[in-house]
Length: 480
Ligand code: NAD
Image: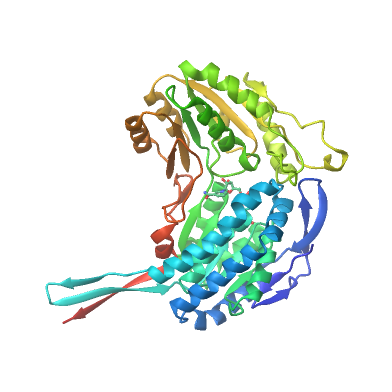
């Protein structure tokens, strides 16, 4: 399953002739290769995007919306192909790709098509002396850089509003998961999207990604990925004064009060900690339980974690597939070893599973892991592990839970489980995070603002925020 760059509507090998291997995390086998692109390929894609932008930026909104809906239709028609490739590339359970990733990609295009058609900008009458109004105009070429954990979901979350607003795009998907981006290029050729409006260049971040970020002809960068990378990208882009959206890492608190619906809280916390093998920026990897229910909660939680099936991502009963790379698994195993060294208890999991079928032995599996009694000073509370690992701790009062939640340098999201509505509102106000869920986790309507505070990011996307980011609002002031 080899992949080529998609530039100006055509497939191109990288000019250098260099390729990277693509590995199936479920088996450790090489399943194909992808371009190891450099600045030359990126510049070709940017030039194609500029050429296509001349017409696309002037295409009527109805036409852009029609094409976006065509893309949604074609992804929907090929949903099973997309889901299988996403599962193969990331190692995520096939049912999860079917239920979440692919339907969300369809919704991203449909939502921004509809948004485009219903969009209004204001006019202001200044006491009869002036009429002022706003024009929403494209920014230019968008550089869209996405990670490996939700490849199609996050690529389309950027691409749909970018194209809707009349921009063209150069996308740089993660070098670890190129397959659904590649299938998307087939879809783009099946619809009426003019060549060059969307270009996709594969390769490593420090070469292809950095070339995109540093190019003066790309005035907008939308990046989702790790905080360290986000910092580098800000530095690289700074001399060019670009529009930037940074969706970065998270180390999210999941707080359970003694009055919570216990079984709903256990079930929700389990999903929050372990969905996609804990490789979601929003994962509730820090569990804080009020002391009166700690033992009851943890008894149920440990039993349910131990029962989660680890294994073949294509089986319907698998909840935990492999981690995406051997490096991710090593990082998780190092965290478990550190916790043990620091005197914490690993009460569930913590090991590479032994009972896997022969064909999966080369895959990057890890048992879902619960760590308890971790020292308050351990940096494992602070650093994003991004694996199937949760740390659990008792708290006494709401103010203690708020204090623990806010000790993190991250501020992406948090969950609070309680039946006390006024406490829920107070917690939501006090927790430093872009999103606070109450009695749920990771529900996200495309209309709501999404983004992080502190080291979890800069800016908001979703709804009008996406329109604002992917366009320039120009004010026209007319003397009457
Ligand atoms: P990463 O930062 O390593 O890579 C993300 C993308 O950036 C990749 O396409 C990569 O090639 C590119 N990149 C790397 N270095 C670059 C550079 N110097 N210049 C330009 N591009 C560069 O992240 P990852 O490991 O792919 O993804 C996991 C991280 O993403 C986690 O930290 C996770 O929390 C975060 N994430 C955040 C959100 C969010 O919405 N806040 C969503 C998903 C994932």
